Length: 156
Image (cartoon, rainbow, N blue to C red; front, top):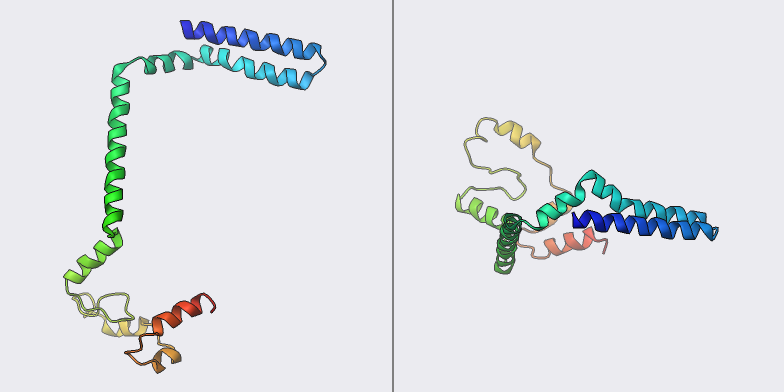
């Protein structure tokens, strides 16, 4: 009830200021002030003010906000711990895949040993990309091939 009275008084004051501004021949500014001053009374008439005041004074609502804050705090704490440990989801997934001891060819997109690949070995060989000439010329123990690839990627 008090909130509705305050909003009505604010709207009346705003319309008064708009009338004074219009009297001074500043019609565009007066129209803008009148539009702003009608917002509080519009909120009262639609029931938004009553709804907000009902939420603000209920203890159960504040307990709910507290529970949401606690959930957010726990979530952010786990994210911080995860970042400090240096392990990401992708790294954990790769570690789990390494534990399964699946043999993977260097250029393959799927494990080279497994039940699924025995059914169609010819199709898998045909789908494999052909190595480029520079990759064929590089020795298998060449430590600088990764660095060269990164430099070429950046145009250096």
